[in-house]
Length: 96
Image 1 (spheres, rainbow, N blue to C red):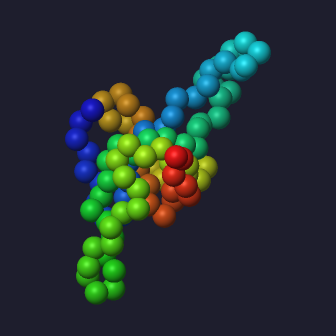
Image 2 (image 1 turned 90 degrees about the vertical axis):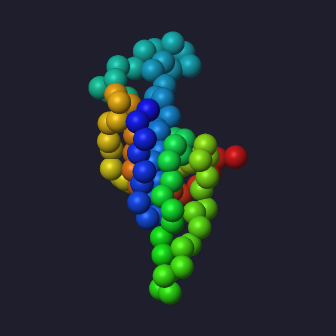
């Protein structure tokens, strides 16, 4: 993957792979499958600045599995890989 360096409090997330088959064996075509609202953090910005100009550290870490809102972030494609760029506040939880 090419290097991508998010700015401020932005996070780059690789969306989890969609399930293409149901537990009973029915294959779901790509056009009918819903996008997953979870993924893995692959890049972090340095964090946003507070009112005094000091950096606020990011709460998520590289490699964290996270949940995010359905309409969160911006979809991008880097080296044929689908990624999401979003603000840290768009992440609703870390999956442990």
